[in-house]
Length: 339
Ligand SMILES: Cc1cc2nc3c(=O)[nH]c(=O)nc-3n(C[C@H](O)[C@H](O)[C@H](O)COP(=O)(O)O)c2cc1C
Image: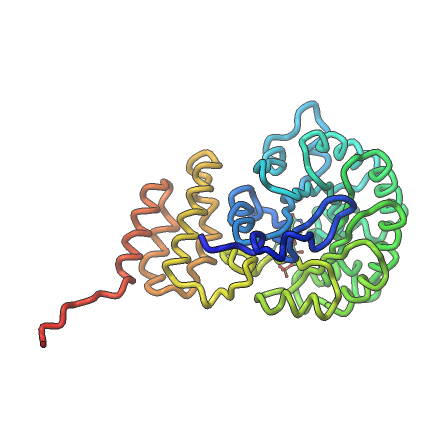
């Protein structure tokens, strides 16, 4: 594999610290439930993603006698994944603390509170972005966590609830005053969900409001956008979500349309093997389907090969079809009979 961003000599100096935790790099895979699992994070790390978050985990699933297995798996990590951020969400400060203390024992470098999830199920009960209209809850949560945890505590927020209630400045100050060591912000309101455009001016404003590191997030699509967002906002790092699906190259600042078909298939093979090894069969292969569609979007002969790749359930069948596809696309060199 080519030299990755995190191995460049100028990356020997940390780009920034989360309290005392160094971060080597400025492009970070966003937490994405259903996508940013151990296998995909391994690939993004290889291309230079500088810090990793788990998919978010509800605190309720961490408080029983035994951690709920479905969510427990989300707290899995590779030994070399550093810094590793465990992300949780809840609507009760004491329960958040109890869950955080429990997972701290599993060895994260940082614990992050999700204050950005906009789905009704989460925000409607005052968790995720539903915390933002509750400054007292934010204060109590960060106060408790920063007092009782050893690892740094961070939070991921949005602009606020809606156009008329953008209180990110107030919430960020409360977080900082109560011990948060980093704030990441997706530049949209809860009401916007993923529509409209992320407000990078607001990220610049947040950067000017707090002195802890800030990670900007929202609508970074290309390697140029990483530098554009940094220049526009002054943020310490950029978090990339949707544009990183099927596109780990963005972390090495390589544009998706410069990646050859063969290189894409190589990444697909590595990723699908990681999935098949990591999950019980056939889940690894079936779960890979949504990634695959994004890797091979617009690839030659895609209509011919993708449908069967989306049906198979074993790694062997999957790899056979992939080989056939690669052979079909390879240039056919015929010997020229003329002298
Ligand atoms: C499928 C999906 C799952 C997500 N899951 C999480 C999550 O678990 N935790 C979180 O903080 N944000 C989650 N997000 C939000 C992203 O981290 C990010 O803030 C958002 O996608 C905006 O960034 P982007 O424009 O680069 O995609 C999710 C987004 C998507 C699309």
